[in-house]
Image (cartoon, rainbow, N blue to C red; front, side, top):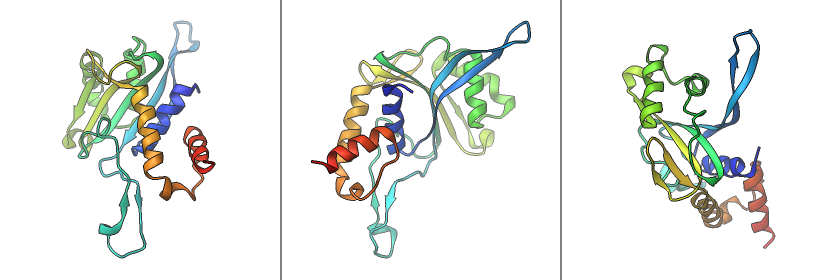
Length: 204
């Protein structure tokens, strides 16, 4: 796993996402042999009411500490947010291989958010628009699925996908660890990137 993917995973973790990294996309060839055609850098899922809450010892949720999420990333707290992510240390972009039907079918089936009857339409919307939405009637809970590229360049919408700058990612992580240093200080963070940055703050 490269450094960019580790950084993005740490960022998503702090914002309440469950992630799978470097998920292989495998295709069967004409001769019956199997080969990996690409991999999905990061596949991420966040549930609507996900929060990182620290109880403060007093009764009632009003006193609990709720760690802030990045509003650039977490826009809608009423839906399941599924992100299919490409991570580049250079210019942020989505490769054609990520938009392939094989890759998108693999991602959607791995998450399990899309009914089979709607799979082709959902893949088509992702390929053409970079986003698809499923209603509660369709998926059991409202779901947003989007293509996201992490890398260099300005954060914002592109033609068919969303871009989040790695500089923005790094800045959010630094500010989060600084803001909540007094809370996290006694903890050992298992995430590799967060663990190193957290340790450096402890050693100051």
